Length: 221
Length: 211
Ligand SMILES: Nc1ncnc2c1ncn2[C@@H]1O[C@H](COP(=O)(O)OP(=O)(O)OP(=O)(O)O)[C@@H](O)[C@H]1O
Ligand SMILES: [Mg+2]
Image 1 (cartoon, each protein chain N blue to C red):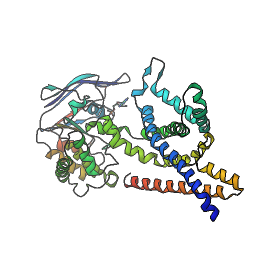
Image 2: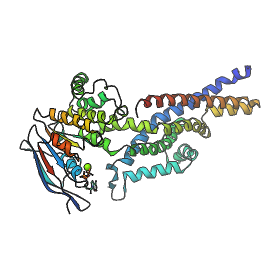
Image 3: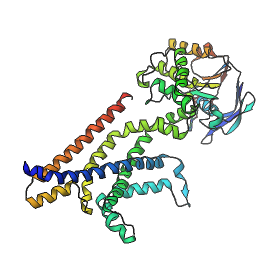
Image 4: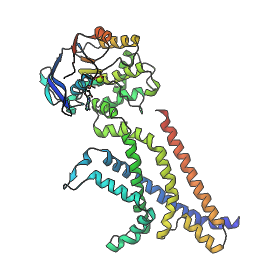
């Protein structure tokens, strides 16, 4: 028991880092994902620039790149690779950049599916009522899309809690690293078990919040 | 008086509407009938600007207007579409006051006041807080009409307004349309239902499929 109380502060400060990466990644990547998905579904992004490629194709390429290579590689690329060409990030910023860019690609695909499942008649009746496209998107389309995508977003959110442990490779002292150090130092499994429990607690918390949100959206169909 | 003159529309090189003209005097109801596939919905979509006509002109009280232009259309022309197009994420009241608030810039109180009056007229009192999925077909239909009326359009178009209704409800909707024949409103109704057409029409035109 004393031992647990002893190592808890370092685990908790690691958990705090994990939470920070988690939180900021969501704050950045969800809106970015929505914007990218609008680019994928809008008719305005079809136009070719310089007769070579369209914005839509550019976004598709980006998503392919982000989903087709390991997040770990992207993380290493941003932190250890980019400085070679003079782009230097602090560890923590590098983690946020890599995670946000990666998760935005996944969110974009999820939102694209959501936007495409809204029937055309919704846009038409909004336009007959005189709503402009921004008003239509905000008041009519986004709420319906959110309802559709929340389960898939939930999956990604839970994944993100666990993926955040990857920041460990660029030397950020997150929860996993704190547990690993304590285990190596004290030759006991206990810290790793505590780490597992904290991750479980975090994902359980996310699940509860997601259920709440789903419930909020269940008042209509 | 609303007039559409020499409207034409092609889809993929197939002529659907060819030089079609119609006119609706104030406070009158024009019914458009014709066999399935003749182009009635297409005509209505051209009138309401959801499709842009390949050629033709539109006049409201001798002023030319362009239904595909959002500004021309605002508070001029409304459509009650066949599937009603209610917003499932909004309650009946929210469906009705959304556009008056955002487009006509009414305050929430003004919008609600106006909506309540219309809701009472169309016999929907007590349904304000329900979501569209909680309504019957006929109730949805009437909410769609209230929502359109809340924008105070001069011209109201309906696509198959009775297709989801039993004869008794059709007659109710017919009464509502007849009640609206005031304030210089013009109504255009596309329908298969000849009984309904007889009940409401001041004038009937037939759309024939083009060869
Ligand atoms: N967006 C479109 N693209 C191509 N063809 C279309 C389109 N919309 C309608 N058409 C064609 O135009 C013709 C007329 O269709 P429309 O829906 O206007 O008929 P309608 O008279 O309303 O028929 P119904 O009574 O069955 O509703 C049909 O042959 C249809 O296939
Ligand atoms: Mg039709």
